[in-house]
Length: 299
Image 1 (cartoon, rainbow, N blue to C red):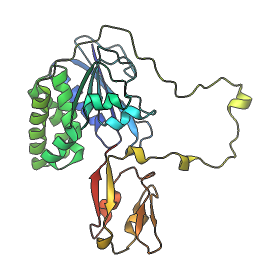
Image 2 (spheres, helix red, strand yellow; image 1 turned 90 degrees about the vertical axis):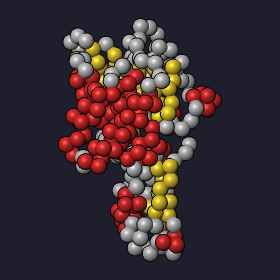
Image 3 (cartoon, rainbow, N blue to C red; image 1 turned 180 degrees about the vertical axis):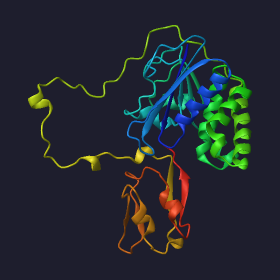
């Protein structure tokens, strides 16, 4: 049985990529299982999804703890303690990483990547082909299908099953072009084999929670909230950039920002707090004078 684990952020389409792979595998005659875990269920928050492909009934359930293939939609997840995408991998695990960086650069800044790491910039490929970041799910779903040995025809059926009902003819055509490009990009990579070793990377401990009796473990909480201490700026893939010469100070961005990450300066111009802005880009879409543009985040 092949076990594939997807890691992404809310809005990157990794649940859809998992489903595209599952539908493609089902069409190819595999027994398939796929399921997501959404975590905080907020745009930009780390999430994961799991796909299993087998030629026999799948009796395993739940999360994939020892993956044959890990697909990571964003290299910033490597340093995110809430995501920990490398858990459970060993030298036989293949990692497919959507990144503009080379493996050596990532290792140099401290990421303990396994031996088999494949990187490519699928974000730029998706945007250039479809003018939409939403199609990243297609690019990574198809590249993953290629990595587990499925055909392009199977992958296209998977895309059709998962997306065609709510896309226009133009979007379907763009997705087909993107799928062909992503499949060609992955065609030089070796097909992933089921892992044999049980040696895994030791899991980092998030918190050591000791057992307490109910009188202590279920206390009443009177302290003020601590959510302001949770910075969500590292969730951001694209940052909004304000061009003050186009701003009319209408305050629409200030009012609509769901994270209250936009304040006003002494002249009533909006100011973005990039520690809190998670990159939903609602300000960009709502601005009537197009005073906001977007810039790809580089970390």
